[in-house]
Length: 56
Length: 308
Image (tube, rainbow over all chains, first blue to last red; front, side, top):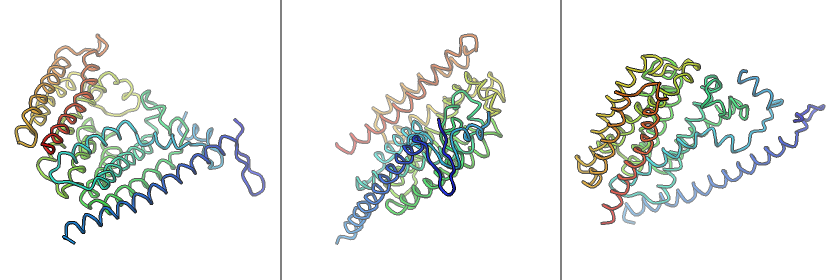
């Protein structure tokens, strides 16, 4: 496997490294979206439970 | 070949080729499935109810927390993982993930899981989860594992907490019932791991890990495997005796425990290396089945009771 090489100020990635970076980025994006959804719906569910308990 | 050497061949200038699947393997998925299962049963059995979405969040956080402690374990144990056949293909010794990446990943997920569980469910379950991660990563991995043959006896507590966390997520409390669930897994751990250690003796020996068979000898280990099967049997039927599981569960538990004790007795009396550890392998396989069935029975029992 050809390895990444340093040029003056940049690093040239190999095809494998580019592919793995892209896959990791997609996975991180999915995790962030999942996190936002969990916090949103979790907050809604928690608020509903609190309101229900207080009889409002 | 050291872990550093392997890593340098696969990583260049700090640029990793690790795929998300490699990070997923750091979480010890098979242990995570067991944690999810037992925590879910703890939630099912707990009196009261929880919003289904918050219940899902609790299970998610508990499984991520368990995975985080697995990643921290792999980070710290990379040196001994590399010399053991069973663990040599883990992501760090295999050169897929750098040890420092595993450490950061584990720390991040630990904090994430505890904070989200605390914010969305309750802080008692979050505290228990945080304590479990600390117990597994620091008390077991960093301290006990390399220093005493009682490592998995005390360290087994980490694997026993999930049903208690699940229970606390629903009730906001720790009660005697959840302690009984804890005790079942806690007492199950030594015979389970020592049966494995008996036929993996050389592996642990090579790594310098003081497991019971290589530290105290095979005979002492067999004695203790049988000895543990007795309190395990008592804790296994306690839910029925104490009335938080039905008599039908009690019948299942008695049957499962009699056979467990019988296999442990065979290991104690007839187990030798001459028959290629046949009894030990059978006990190890059955112990996995045992834990699954006993918790499944508790879960089914709880569902039937709530429905009827």
